[in-house]
Image 1 (cartoon, one colour):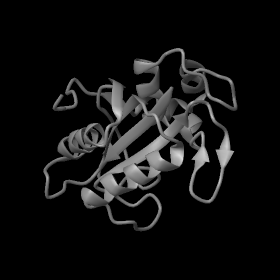
Image 2: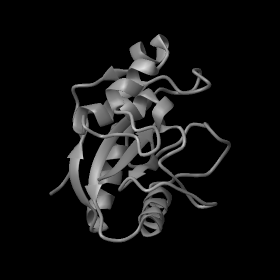
Image 3: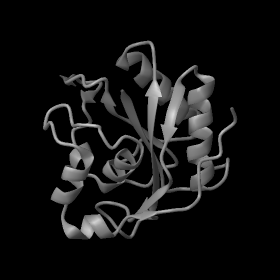
Image 4: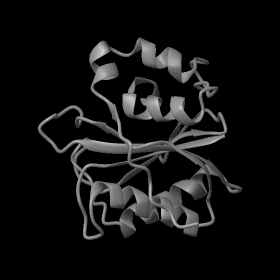
Length: 171
């Protein structure tokens, strides 16, 4: 199983944060990446600077025949197409697409660390995973999303909101 997380906390020339995420998913589909499941939208404050605009995130499970470096290249092209500008870490951004888990591979290189090094600490990653893949287990920690959510500080568990709005995709 391959897990991605897509986030946005800025509007773009394409529209709202919701639009940015929906367009990114449509770009993934157009890149011949098979989307298996998409979570609801989740909204959280920006971390660590809560004065920045709030983030929207969705989790996805996908099928992909090539390796993780090819997937990373496709993701970077989509981010660039949507107008992502690399700035300081944790600054607001139009789109952010992260590979959370790629078939349980454990890898650390200058291009990519698998699984995502902070996925077990992020409510906006764990809640969508729990929704779409409750049996997922962290490749290193060997713990499921529910266990990892319960380990989060209470503030992180309560300052996330699952929205009723769904991703708009063209199939």
